[in-house]
Image (cartoon, rainbow, N blue to C red; front, side, top):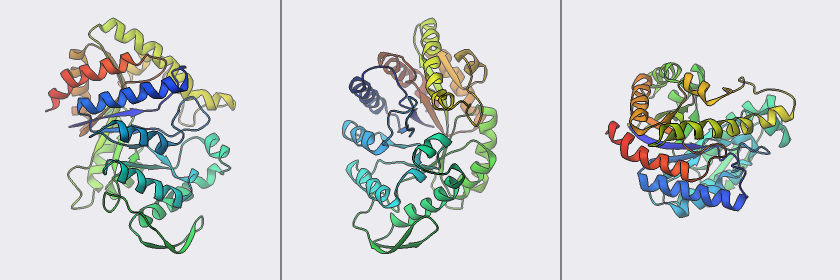
Length: 332
């Protein structure tokens, strides 16, 4: 079992300078705790995501950590120029000593796509084509491509990533078709669903992995987590932080007079607990919950969303410390 962090970088309502300073303290703590990877979301024009340029933020992460791997989950490919992204991926992978993990996706919000002048009906085909462009380009010195959305003729490329042929690919998985596609591509995956659904995705993914796939390939499951020796304080903090996170999650949809395409998120943290998508309480109970859920889902990668909503930075730092001491050894 390996361990990681997923982070929306959603607003805490602090001044932005302090917000980023606190997030960097958070990743430094994750590095010291021996976490494997740190994954961030990309969002635009919404308080759900204050890393709208993932590579800018992650270059700061690279400078402040030594062993922690990191990357976007995901780059919203239709909102990039492929050449610019190729070059930035190479830069970030080289500057970090080969620690970049490359999440790829089309983006879920039609409003974020529209704000970039994109037709949401076209983002699927753009994503699929740009994926080909990116992966081929990262392995090329002279690049030719003739697609519907991008064309290049003997384009000279000066940069390459440190990891060959390119950094590990990550996909978000929320249905059986995505799990099958990820498996066929030998990609790492993360599910935000509970163990019952995640178990089905893991089985489909494993069944479709190509022969010779690296044993290090990961299928992860993510949970909201607040861990505290004071269980009541953990629950109160989680309840309050989740309400702010939920407000940020729904902001852009409500702003446009609609609801999220995949349905609204749980109204309260107590509902999150009932769905088994999160935990708040003591280290001992956290260990029991996470061991049970991970075993049930059959995952080999466990992610915590320790920092969400308007909680102060001391809360996720305390959670990570207790997670390192009491939870990680249980999976040794």
